[in-house]
Length: 232
Length: 241
Image (cartoon, rainbow over all chains, first blue to last red; front, side, top):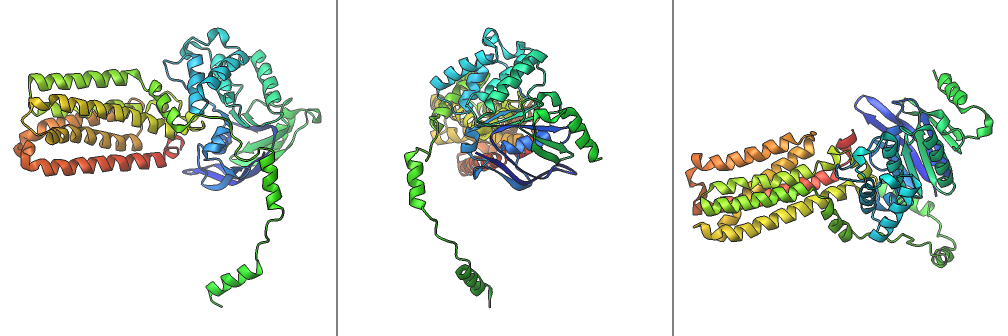
């Protein structure tokens, strides 16, 4: 399975958010690095079929990203998300299961499994509005995994997680990424250092660098800073 | 050589080769169950009925109370004023369209299999159907309190409701605010317009005007359908741009 972006461009009035980007994502974890405002979120929204690019195409094994079939295999965690006020954590996951098209039996099973996985069992029946930032983020991670996605796109997934949760999350992503396409955006370099098989560095809407990443190759933070610096 | 001949000549020269081993390829996919391999998922019908649970309960309560109030008014003071109350029935549906955005669920819903478009259309359809069905039942109940024919009562009830639904949906499509003040204002204005109209145009509820009411009904119903179609087509773009 491959997710292919071909010369995609997106412009907002006088700002080019994504500028003629082309790449192919294969199985494994791909880290998307870039400063705030580099265009990471816009790129991720395009890859999820939420935003339509001004030019260029995104396909997954020839399947257009705007199709129901594509969304069926997609898991997405946006940078910010809300919840309906009456929802408990469990209700939220059951609602997302329904929107993702899971049958009730399957939805109940997956919800219980994921509540365990993200360690929200004690809080599952409490209203989401009583959750801490980290708990909400874990709930967001759980909803992204509900449909057992083949393509997992996560925008700043570690935001709000405490150090212990971040390590747990990194291990989870590394395990998921073995047989799925995982794209993870962050501006926290250490989140990617040990789990990313591949890296993409964005700056001002453009793809500054992309390639394989090996944890043994050196310090990722230094590498990232040097790449950003080279371009100045 | 003109263009047509040139195209034919190119086709002859650049004839694409026939696929090799096509039958074997499809047989392989068939044997390995690789054709149309999809997980069992919900049908569109199941999704639609499931969404019934997720429509805000206040909408059903508000609509129910409003319909009871209209019935009571018609029973106590039969006149033309109860007809001006039906725009408020559209209010719940209009505010429901903003729910995903207000609670920042739109992005999550958009990336899901059934998509934001399906979620919104399902809710509009369900809330609209239940409200319209309620209104039709009320029309049958209140009809004996009026000297008008059933078709006239139907038109007098439906036109203000559809006018508010149409103008409100145009507003919601073009300007989405956090508090839905615009939709509330549109419903109030529609109601005021139909309440005040007989004062300026005394023949409005006369039998000879029925054709005008029927034309207004068709016009507002078609405009509403057209606007909803346009809304569904361009749902994603204005949201994040």
